[in-house]
Length: 225
Figure 1 (cartoon, rainbow, N blue to C red):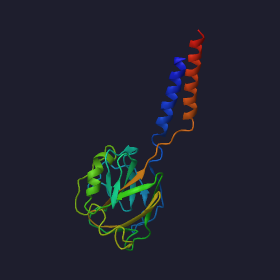
Figure 2: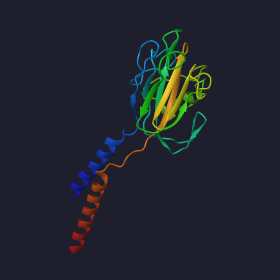
Figure 3: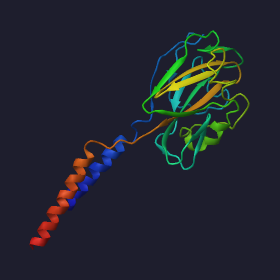
């Protein structure tokens, strides 16, 4: 009996571990081209995202912390996400190597980049000084990645929600964000927060029923004695 219970317990643990990474990550991009002829892409988290440490020629995105339970309300553009919400974090950026101009979906730089997640978008941090990003990097940043403090023009300049495409902008609907960036020096970095719900595995109720059944059978045998 003990062996069976241990096996069932191990099965539950295995299922929960296998689903721990679900519903949290970047899924796809439209691979639109910047004015440099380079496609938007999803990458692994860089080792360092300080100014000029990670550069590119097209908008890129990477996953940060996953399945994080907020200990306090989290400030995002125009509002807050409530404490207790299970969220995942992601970074989107365009950062030229030097002072050269790069346009991707903004100005005359082709089509905007889109990124789709497997969780609903709850909010974005894009303020020009990067203060929202800097205030949350200690618990939302990717493990092992170096993050800077806030500095001028770390985020998007102007009003990214004004609907104009001559400068930096973004919009989102359900699980997809559309982004346009126009950078010289420094680049633009925004953090996207998505909902992360841990699903209950289909096999879990069966395993729990099995444990309950074994417990009932064991009790009946003891009573029979």
